[in-house]
Image (tube, rainbow, N blue to C red):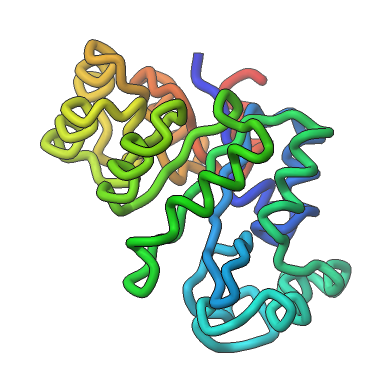
Length: 239
């Protein structure tokens, strides 16, 4: 049965990657939330998608150039709506504390950048370990090498490669014992999903908002639909 992960929280209804969006996803009954974590220049972990501030924030600059105290001063909700002008970029710990009290599955995307690709995995996984999240989450990343590092150092965690729908990338996931592949949905076929499932690999697709596309993914038999529009996904998937 295809399940729903709220992409950056319930981001159609609330500003993305904010506690407001995560709370709303939980209220709506999404099976899981997808979010993004960055390593800042002071070693703290922050929940945010973009590498460069400005699209969602009332600030500019590369996210890794800031420490958390500075970044916390920026609104990350006002551009969405004045109603959310007090929303701030969450600490990763803030989200994890929320999940301890409000259980919902976590799809944690590690944002591995050129300047930190070799040293972001361990602090993220150590934080997840501190909150006993090994059976409550999956780790995703566009850098397969980061996932290889996680499987070596933290084998108790599930990982999924964010990639396209090429069969050679699915085969990489199979050969490297990844639990999932997270491909862009447009290229996915029933044959692709069957091959993945035959090799014990889940198929979790992003980012699917249109009713027709969600229905096609359901018909393909994917495991997870990652969607900005939780309400539409629930309508199509019958949840």
